[in-house]
Image (cartoon, rainbow, N blue to C red):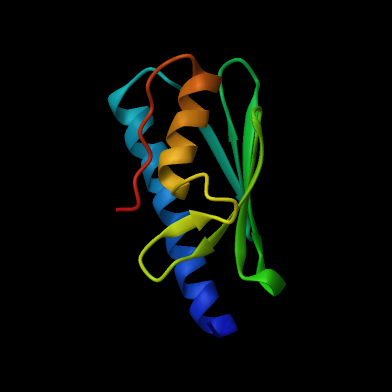
Length: 110
């Protein structure tokens, strides 16, 4: 994968994350604050816990730091997969966000 290809795919992921936050906030009382600075998005929940998603451009990876730990994702050709076989990015984000928010939250790629 070239650097421009990675950036295009990774930017789509970050945009989908932001759009999911907007949808979640419109459809529920979850109150998930999302702030983007460059290639990093910080999600802050009502209980002040956070999930941070950051691009690791030299490695062509997306990293997620949640209360449960840190995760690395690479593009598989169809989706962002955990480098240690722990599943797909949006499923993991949904599970971690739900745990931290104390309610079911669903983040999607599109």
